Structure formats: C-alpha cells, structure tokens
Image (cartoon, rainbow, N blue to C red; front, side, top):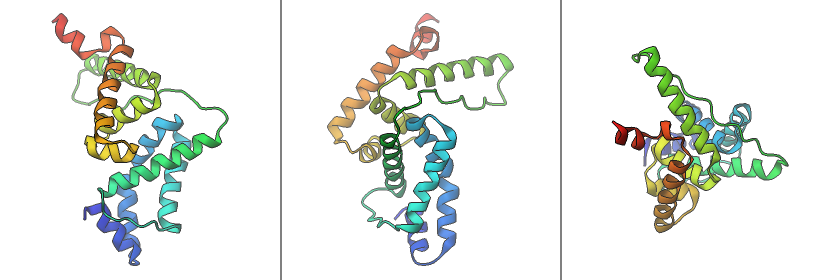
Length: 186
C-alpha cells in the first residue's frame, strides 16, 4: 500500500493525523486538477473540500487496486463532473500561469511565462477529454495506466487519446510557442 493509502487506513482506524497528511499532500494538486474542469479557483477549492468531506463523512472503501492518488483523483474528477452537470453555464477562462523560476533572467522569465500562457490557452481550447489526459500525464505526472483509471479508459483508448490530444495541442499552439518549431528554426 502506498503512503496515501496507509494514511487513509490510519484515518479510518481513528488516527486523525492520517487525514491531515492526505490533505497536506494532495490539496493543491487536486485544486489545480479540478480547475481544469471548472475554470474557477474558488469553485475548485470548494470542490476539493468536498472531496475531503467525502472521505470524512462517507468514508469510501479504498481497495488498493490502484495507487491511492489515482483513486483520490478519480473522486475529484467525479466531483467536478457532478458540479458541471448542475451548472447551466460553464466558464472557459484559461488557467493562470505559474510563477517563473527565480534563477532565470527577466527576459527568460517573460518568455517562459508567455510560452506557458500559450500552452494553457491552447489547452483550454481542446476538448475536455484531450485537456484532461494531457493535464494528468504532463502536468500532474501520472503514468498512462493511472490516467486511464482516472478517466475510465482502456489501455488502447488511452494510447489513442494521448496521440490525438498531443496532435490537437500542437495544432492549437501558436507557432512561436511550439518547442518543436523553435528547434527546427535554430
């Protein structure tokens, strides 16, 4: 059993520190993941709280058939999808760019922020399934097997989805933001 699964098992046995460990470890990542669905950080934070509230109140059974974080992200995905079903209007604002690396020069930092904003903008233009698969694999670092479990896809469906999502992202990126095109011009 992984560390998150062990913490959850301890929590279910009565050790509240186990839940605190889970919240500390996964809260920020879950908020960012949920935000890929709802495009609103305050709502993402609320839905993340709902995920932890579910662990507290419903105490769902974690069977250990996948990594704990895969199971937890699947719960978060379901919360986000339930929220979207209840909404009449869906927001489409792109994610805010993350802070630049302090070791970069101001020019490099500006270029990196612009590239990152272009990538997030392009991601926001993709279909939800393409956006989700790219976010889980390339931003959250899940392997394809874990991402397939979260998105409820077969291995073959996931391979096809990854390929198509990368193609769609390349097509949506402006030429100056595409790393491949920059390398070819050098």
